[in-house]
Length: 259
Ligand SMILES: NC(=O)c1ccc[n+]([C@@H]2O[C@H](COP(=O)([O-])OP(=O)(O)OC[C@H]3O[C@@H](n4cnc5c(N)ncnc54)[C@H](O)[C@@H]3O)[C@@H](O)[C@H]2O)c1
Image (tube, rainbow, N blue to C red; front, side, top):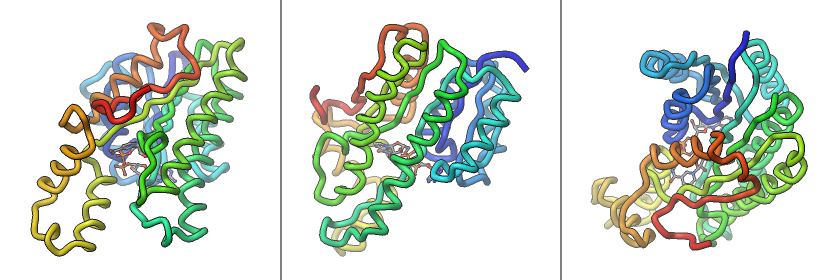
């Protein structure tokens, strides 16, 4: 097979589908992956029906080296490996004193080790010019009393991306990071469910109202981000328009983190 191929992890989530949909405009083939397989085939068909690209679906647990290797075996058969978007991740509100070593390890296994495994194999196999975009979080730069393990795992992603950028600067592979702000996905639905369990008054409110309150309090611009906002930043970093940009981190967050 020929043609430029992009891999997206975490494609069954809230941001993954928007990212896959957007970059399907720019690549010949997009390989969408997730540990949750149920949605992938339908999503692939839906994107393929509207974008020009071929869209393939495959299970991948990013924390498992064997599954990561299998994805790259498949990708190499389907096209010239040109881009990787590390969007798979978990984020679970937990008070600092209740984070167990198991919570910590699981957070790092998916958010950090997953990014490492996917990126390392990408660097071995990519055909330059090639690019990686990592999805970190404003949690990497703004401490949060409920997300100490999440923030640390996402900060590690940023520094890892710096090292990939340096290591690959002369070989035509770029690595950049997007820090999303607050987007209403399953991750936030899970967080709000947790908050409502702790607070009976909050539990009486519709989820959307609680989310609007969080947004109003946390985001200087006063509005949530949409998955498409993140997808647009990803598409930019992967494109030739960013050919001289590597090792950078872009917040798409309505002003939460000022750099
Ligand atoms: N939603 C937000 O407000 C927000 C803000 C900042 C950063 N982020 C980051 O954006 C990314 C996407 O988040 P989202 O909001 O779409 O969350 P989401 O929970 O909707 O989607 C995450 C996806 O990752 C997948 N996943 C989990 N563990 C995996 C594993 N081991 N291997 C492969 N896939 C796995 C899940 O199945 C899910 O489909 C995450 O990295 C998250 O940390 C989200």
